[in-house]
Length: 132
Image (cartoon, rainbow, N blue to C red):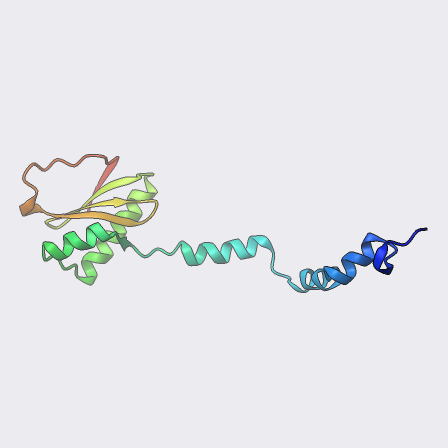
């Protein structure tokens, strides 16, 4: 058999020396975590149940001097969970004298309105409402 230049007899010898195939095989066997387990871990981190407020919603809350108490925040999160259970994507959540438009799949409050500022009481681009 003719030797390949640099004194290698086969492609396996090249890959063993230059690509460290043996060491990568060892690292694969040492890692006992399956893809499914890694995916679940990542989903647990990113799929947290904490409700987020968009920049727009945060500005509206600040401009309108709306401060949610811990109890109100929990009720709002409960309303979002109820909307999610019903398959609602864009929800109007009415809480006391406040109205929130929430993107349910992303668990993000899009905007917040105080009842005194809602002259028309018309809400568009929603597919469900929750009153808590």
